[in-house]
Image (cartoon, rainbow over all chains, first blue to last red):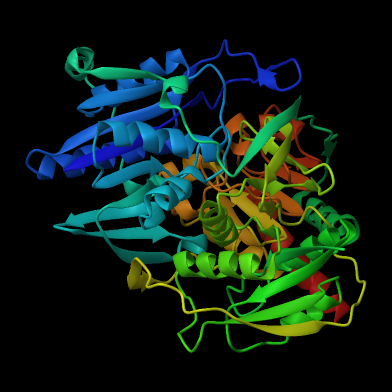
Length: 255
Length: 321
């Protein structure tokens, strides 16, 4: 059994983003593995430990610096990894095609994991596009995954905490949500072992992808400007409550 | 006039509050709006939406086969309907189920999808959305035979512009069998309103001190018809479930009013609620980050202010009756 986990390298959540030119950012930032992908990887490793001869392979489309992210993936338990190296960003259509091509060159997936969304682009699309390309079923925002022979039971969390458990046949795609597990920090020993694991590097251009039917291009990037001016509401708490009612009624018009 | 499809999610057999604003906005883009309906029984919401600019309701049927219930089959139905009718554009509100449906349709059609748009230009084929968890605003151009857009809830005002609603039946061939089967479902752990839909959200953080104290917010939320959210600290401490988390790694919401109680306002929390129209901070610390980024703030104790607000809202309502 082969489990592929698609991971992305993203700017750290605390990083301040500075814009360069029309549509790029300065990349002198701290980059980390996308948080939801950590849940995906952790789950894949747990599952692979229960099946004899099961292999977990982390796959990433990213800059050369994404080697660090794949190194962490292997320290967290992936058996090996594949980096599709590219100096430019790609939309989710091309990303899904590139991931599929790289996986196809490597082997036949029984299970593909992704995180439920990338923290930087927040698109929530790549898992669905991968599934469509593979003609596999997909469940998103998984909070529980049970592999039972040829079937998988995936519980996903929807709005208002509604939970649905879906049965799918392998192979399928599962995107991991936050409640799935608690990823741990790798030990020093795991980090040392990771260095001996295999990381395959493929140049994006060498994948020779077909031109997709559509695409998205980032034209312009601007910093978000906060335009708020804070007004201090003062007085006794009962007076503040009355002022709030006035704001909710007159300005916000929600009551 | 260009035709565009709009998917109306009906969680509780009615459209989302945000759908009215979205329809009003899309009407201004100069396209004819067709809503696809997958369920059999109408509850009259179509007429209400026509008051805001919906042109036509298309009821889909599948050659006697049962109507699609799973997200997978719903998306296939919408994709087939767009292809059959030659409608190249799809819009829906970027709520949690909306996002999933749009992503599945876009994958099915290999169409570009821009999520959480605040503005769309159909001539230039561009849309405005945010990137890097709300730290930047981006203009993105799309190309393809089909284009899909998710519209951020509450960012456009509902404007009445009544139209005579047309209706149509569209017969599609039966859909292939689904590959995901629902085996169990569990009702929400949250007895409140969907946070994507809520016009007002009361949110609690470290300052709430424990899970039980969230009742103070819930009681006030009842008076306001508001949703209750939480910061990462509150969910990580196990006070409230993850489904309530607002922020970079949680839900991204755009309510009309966001009342942050005992929340310091980290960059990560802001990423999830900075698009709120009005931010009100209740925080004892005048130096907290949330205070500087709010529209109104008070440094009085939230354990005093919120229960008094609940009382004041009750009085306000009584006086109006």
